[in-house]
Image (cartoon, rainbow, N blue to C red):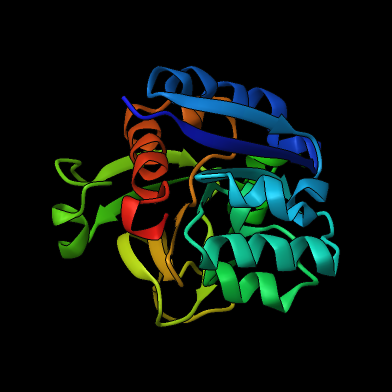
Amino acid sequence: MTRKKALVVRGGWEGHQPVAATELFLPFLRDHAYDVLIEESTDVYADADAMAETDLVVQCVTMSEIKPEQLSGLSAAVVAGTGFTGWHGGIADSFRASSDYLHLVGGQFATHPGKEPCERAGDESDNFLPYTINVTDLGREHPITAGIEDFELHTEQYWVLHDDLVDVLATTTHPARPWQPWHRPVTSPAVWTRQWGAGRVVVTTPGHSLDVLENPNVRTVIERGMLWATRTASAS
C-alpha cells in the first residue's frame, strides 16, 4: 500500500480541545498508511517544501490568527492537490479576520443558537440543542456520506454563512423559535466538500466535544472525509 503524508495542525481556542480531539483520529490515519506529522501552530503552512510533500492537512485551530505567508502557503498547497479537512470550529471558525481563508473554505461559522433564555445556566450547555443532520440527495451517493441515514445530535448547531461553490452532503435546519429574531426556519450546510484547484476540501460542522466526535455517524463522516480529501494520483 502506498503511504501518504498527513499533516495535523492544531491549536487556537482550548475549548475545542485541539490536542485530545485530533488524537482521536491519529490511529485511523496510521492504520490507513499515513505517515503523520503533528504541528502545534500554523507556521508550517509557510514551509513550501513541507506542504508540497503533504497529501492531507487535518486542521483543528479555532479562531486564532494566520499570517499572510502562512495562508498563502496553505492555499497554494490545496490548489496543487493537497487535501484539506477538519471539523467544527477547527476549520469553520478559524482565522475570522481572514477573508481569503473564508474564500478557501467556502463557509464560515456565524453562530450557534441557544436555548430559551429562562433555561440557560450560564455555561456552554446554553448552546446545546437537539437537532437533526439531514443527508442530501447528493450526500446519499457521495463516498463520504453514502449509507448514513439522517441522525440526531444534542450539541452546538452551527449556523453557517456559505457560497455556491460548496457541494452540500448534509444540512441542518434552525427553527424559528419565539425568542429568536429570525422569522422562518434557516437551513445551513452541516457537511460539505469544495474543489479548489486540484485539491479537495471537506468540512464537517459537528464536533464541539469529544463525545460528539465519537458519535459513530460523525466519526465516520470525518474519517471518510480524510480519505476522500487526500491528494489523488491525478493531482500528484
